[in-house]
Image 1 (cartoon, rainbow, N blue to C red):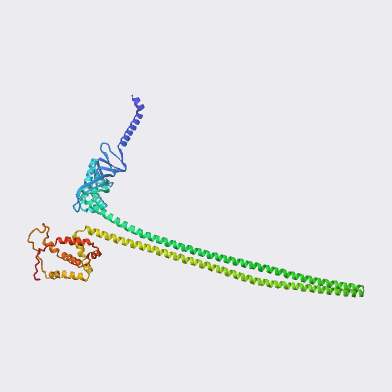
Image 2: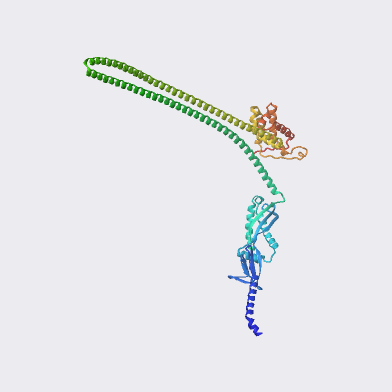
Length: 564
């Protein structure tokens, strides 16, 4: 046995150490905790000192930690954002209107160390539902508090302001609990009394009215712009036609100029050719004359040489034959000389003829120059005619453009006057319809407002009637110091009569309409005067009939007393 221990003792120790190390590693691995970035690892169970502060837990965010077995335990707290619904019902606002508001808040546990510690100390061990209820209660209280400081218009039209104020207040309160609020959105605003709907109806009516006005203005502007665009298009078309006419005129002028230059160059070329041919012919003829003169001189010289030879031959033989031969040679020489002279004269005459021909050819050049001058004059005349036609076409196009522009302006002015008259007619129609639906009191006010104009239109006779009617009223009123209305009882109102106040108040209108009735009886067309002022004839007749029902003997006692 001892031998076995000695033989196997060392391996057993090694295996035991390895098993112990493996057990330690497994235990360490099982208690080594990792924390993802969206959670907080809370290790608790023993005191931990951090500076001067001692806490019974450790907080690890986005890392790892070793949890001591038996002495420590751990848990996780999520950092994810979650939604909390907040709603208040029939909460009075600044004006006392009960308002119902529904909102949603996005909240999360704060990652800041101090707030995170506060959240751990307050929320550890609570369920998610309990946390949501606590946060909802806090948000509901803040929402009620802020709604009480705002009007309905502020809540409905400026929800962002409401959300910002709630967000600012909630941030402070939730920070104490270790939470932070990211977003607060108002989802619904309502009230049972229909106050918000009334505001919406009013705003809807205003928007519809503004839309109709904007549409009318847009239609009017569209018509104006359309007319202006048509006028501009017509003006542009006429301007384009004018430019085309000017371009055609310039083209015709250039063609005429080119044709003139071409004809001039052709005439000059033809004249130069003729002059060159004449020069060559003259030079050839001069050379021919010179050759003939040289030939004549050569023949004369040859004859002289022949005579001298024969003379020497005769002298060399015998004197007689020589003399005979000499005389014969002399005669022959003279004959030849005469022939040569005649031939020379003929050549001279021919040369004179050639000279005359050349002179005539010079006159031909003058004629060619005259023809060239005539051609130049004809070309200039054609160019002048083309320019005159082009200017005439341009003036014609301008006159057509001015006529079309005047016609377009006339049409535009006609449409404008038509639209204005149509608008005035529609306004009068609407005014008559409005008067038809007015009460007698409203019609009475309108007539009294136009009273000065009515009096002015009644003429001198009508003004005298008005003056006599109101003279006693003015004189009486000027002496009144105080008015006491005494009701002696009775059922004036119940029996269709008028009470004293009504009778007194109707004195002036009754007088006015009495004057109108007198003016109408005198033959004055009061209805036409009212129609000029925009009041239908039927309105006056109805007022006179209805006002007559109220004419009762006045029950008011007007006491005059001296002024104090």
